[in-house]
Every structure is written in structure tokens, then in C-alpha cells.
Length: 420
Image (cartoon, rainbow, N blue to C red; front, top):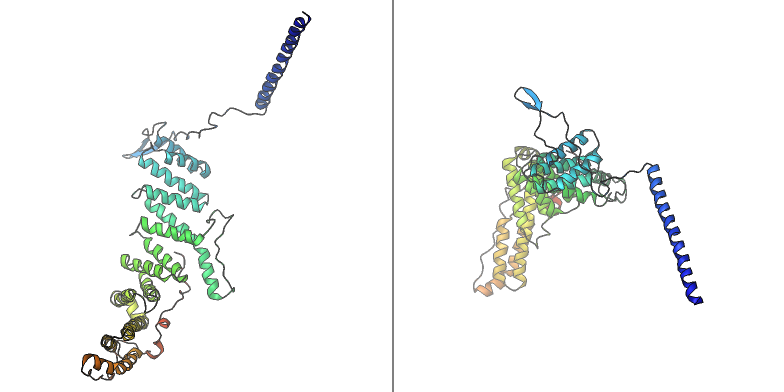
């Protein structure tokens, strides 16, 4: 019986302690709330969702006839109304705040294409006004990909070109320092950790990327030729002659009336010769270079008059490279034991390239093969005539141009990358 009387007493004691701890917890919660209100905190219903765009201006006017009337076409809550409100923030100069609203409007798939395009364009404009050029250029390109024939295409292409041209300033500086020999080694500026106007890595590569996007989005526009010329010049400077000749050739083909076309055709001729890899490789680029020389003489009188010596030297350089290739073909047939085929190819060299060293080399080899050809054919080959006629298409300075590589300069002119 004594045990049964003590157990309820413990339960009663424990029950009296529980309300005390609960009371302290309630008091602490109320104190925290009072402290928050005392500190000036207020509940924000947009804590986890973006705030809505401000309302459009109430005094918007449109011109109807000969007078201004209130514009009542923009209804509150629509995409057009949100866009008008965001543009009002943009006009106030709050580019960081307007950027967020424009981005949200452009991402809303329920808005019309016209509203989405304009919002995306002004999002890029806000980034550009904040000098965040890398992100702005990417946003312009995104707008062009989503709306390739939109109303803001020309403006976006113009700003993309300006940004890319600005990024190439460091490349121009490095080229000038390299030509002047100011430093033993000129390191390109490719890392920009604190400059928001330039990409973090590979500034020159990003500039070339944007130039390619400029040309792709407006192939026949006023900036396409400039984008191609800058691309080709950068590639030429880095000895990437295949990409350089492609860019220059595209400029000459699609923009023949451009003021950059005469300079581009000269650099295209040089690049095509330097991109062949030698006489052991494909010689189609030499054929294309010869066609460009003919085109320069026919279609560009300023080149035919002022740079006639340059074009003649390029013709001779092309002829020497083609002669080397034809001579190597004849040597190949001689090595594999086909004297008649070799004799035929050597004769082609003699007829195509009189007055050159390859004429003399081919004649020497044909005389050495005479007995083998007679044995294979059963009769003696005809006697070889001498080189009695001098070539009429070669320049006067033939003796100093026997090496084809020396006829093509490998360095760009100092002002080739001047800003546009």
C-alpha cells in the first residue's frame, strides 16, 4: 500500500514541471517576434518569388493624325504592360534593376514573340550599359538565334561587332609590340579576372567567335566584310593560312565591291600559296590563287596599275610551285621504273615552264632516260630542242625569284588590323 501512494505523487510532480518549460518556450518565441518588429523587419510576400514589373507609365501618348492622344492599348498585367514598366526603369538609368525585369519577361513563354524579342534585346542593352560585355554579347546572340529576322537584328549585330572589335585591341597591341621588337617574348593577354568588359579566358578566341556570329546573322550586311577581314587577318598573323585564305576568299566572293576587297584579294593570293604544304600535296589552292590573280587584274584597276609588279611576282611564284609539283610527278615515274611515263611528264614540264630551272632539270633527266626509253619502245625518242624561246609572261626579276616561298610575304602590314 505504501508503494501505491508514492507513485501518483511522482506523476503529479512531473506534471507540474511541464507547463513551466512550455511557458518559457512561448515567451522566447514572442520575444524573438517583438525583437524582429522592433528592428524594422517586415514580411515580404515576394521573398521567394520575383516581384512584379512596375505598372506602365500613366501618361503614355501616341500620335494619331495631327495630335497626341492617351495610349490605352496597354492593359495592366499583360506582357506589354510589364515591358512598358521595365522600359520606364531603363529610361531612369537603373540598368541593373531593369535587366532583371527584361530577363523575366523574355523567359516567359506566354508572351508574344514581339514582346519577348524586345525584352531580350533590352536585357542585352542593360548588360552592355553596365559594361558587362561578355554576357551582353551572348545575350545579343541568343536574341538573334531566337528571332533571326526580328526588328532588332541590325542593332544587335552592330553592338556585337563593336564588342568584338574592342576585344581585339589587345591583339593589335601585341602585334605592334612584336613587330617593333620591344620584348623578347610577347605574351598575349588572355586572362582577365577583374575586368568585367573582357572575357575571363581567351579574349581573342571570343572575339573571333563573335565576328563569326556577326557574319552568320547578317551575311550580306554592312559589317560582314569587316568581320571577315578581321578574322582573316588574325588567322594570318598566327600562320593559320587555311582559315585565313578562306575568310579572305569569302570576302572577295560575296563582297566584291567592299573597300576592303583589293587588300583582301592580295592577302588571299598569299594565303593560298602558303597553305598548300609544298609540291607533295594538293595543288588546287594554287589554281585558285592563279584565278584570283586574273580576277585582280581584270576587276580591280587600282591593283592592276599600282600593284602590277606584285601580281606578276605572285604569278611567277605560283608557276614555280606548279612546276615543282609536275617535276616531282615525273621523278616518281622514273623511280618506279616507268621511263616512258617519266619522259612524257618531263616533256610537259619543258613545254609549260620554259626559261626556268625546271626546264633545265627536265632536259637533263630526259637525256639520262633516252637509252631506257629506246629499249622499252624499240625505237629512239626524238631529239630534244633547246630552250630557244624566252617566256613572255614572267617578270623581269626572274633570277632572284627562283625560290617560291620568297615571293609571298608572311607578315601583315602594320595597319592591317586598324579599328573600324
